[in-house]
Image (cartoon, rainbow, N blue to C red; front, side, top):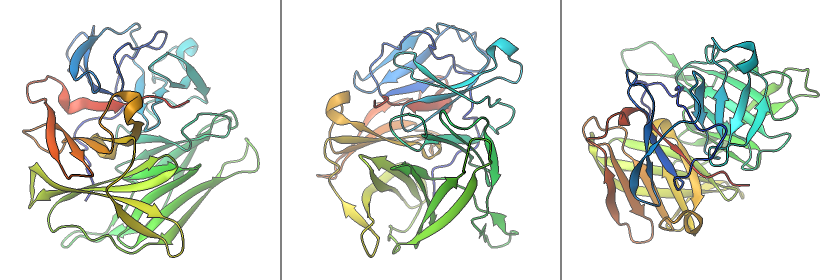
Length: 345
């Protein structure tokens, strides 16, 4: 079962520094101020420095933002923006650099959306995918190629819940490897998502596929799942809980996708000099551990499922260790927290 919380918006009027750099050490856990605050500052938790810092925004904006596993932040044009400030772009929060995109306004996409890029390095031809967690709808464009965003519906079947009418399934976990999008379709297959178009004026054709993959067996009880791209490999992370209690995470398992014949998820206890960063609404990213001052071969996970304990955990894959890095129960605004990871050039 996926880590999905639809109680708070992912699209937020966070005032990132668009013209200057953010000096705190990345990765950063951003804690948005409460809606009724003056937003003159907000807190971020620097994972390498292990401390909370106050960040003062350089500009005030009503624009909406979506973080990506690749570190870039998709900045959407506000529905009430002036014509001079109506653009949409990808922002590097570290240095303020940006890549212009066709205009997409915040009132065109639901607040339950996530964004994933097809490649780590943003270049012409890199795809930007925005998908809704709550319905089978997505938006797509290619950097430097498409003249506009294209909106697509899709059909990956229905959820059959006893006592309820069938409900359309939608993307929850999505990751991109070598320009191709993958998602968890079912227990015995891995879904694929591709877009094809002959030129920029043509609406891309969506091609959904599936790769037969044996089911991964998990402990009985509630399990949070994430798919992660790391160094051009695809990983699956399972965090099992003790029964139905989401306050106490139990065993963590990591699997690497082996695309050789026959394809299979291979359990692993080694991701090398990497650290996985997991957060709200199935956000999952991979960082260089030594490059970011993090513990290698570890998974950092923020428990956004518990209503009482919003704790940041670190799991050691080799020795199976688990500890709490930071407890956030007294931090105002944690319910609207998200990760920003370093952009890899």
